[in-house]
Length: 276
Image 1 (spheres, one colour):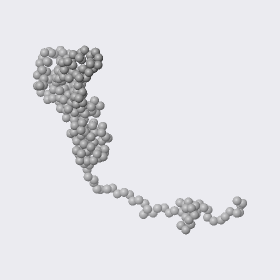
Image 2 (cartoon, rainbow, N blue to C red):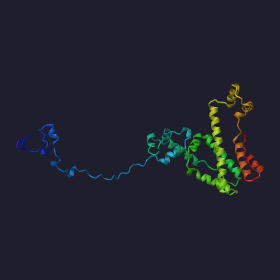
Image 3 (cartoon, rainbow, N blue to C red):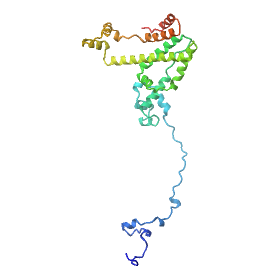
Image 4 (cartoon, helix red, strand yellow):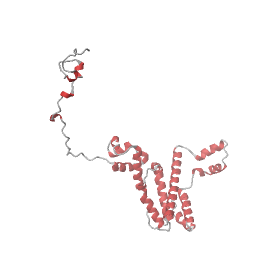
């Protein structure tokens, strides 16, 4: 455009929106330079601190743990715990991360209830026999607890007092702390292994599986199994030795290693044999 032909008037960027002017471009030309700063009435008032106290929560993590521990792990679900506490399932998620966290809480509660045999000055082998029998039965009665133990869900805090008490009993009877820990581990592993075998056997029986029948079927199919065949003919495959015999073998081995009289140990343990 030639010089001098420039129109006068207010530059576009200085024009203010006229409500009577419906030209779209005019809406975009409003400027902040002509706006007024917000007044006191436009400023948000500071929030007042509430003096009203809410009701305390109906549940907490400790209450959930107690409720979970009161249920067999085979029956443990988020819903069963919620029903026991009288709350909704969704409310539990404010305190536990989920099903695995719930199982860990329940397992620790149960582990705290695993009580040691009374220490009344009995021979160490007798005490270990009582302890092994107790935990083997506890794990068989609640297979879910065994799974949590295997998965490492039961913390050291839940077991430390029991372990230390067992070591103390052994040390007072001539064990070094290292020997006592070895004995405790060996006995516990025997009990856990026996629990696994018993749980597996119970599951097989519930499913209608029969080891003797299965072995005979394999033999009939031409499998050369002379030793299993001999055991199947006596019924020994479906009648394993009782746990007492397993733990007696372990404890007798410990006694021999310590140079103790094996006949005395056998006599002490034979007095612990369960009455049929």
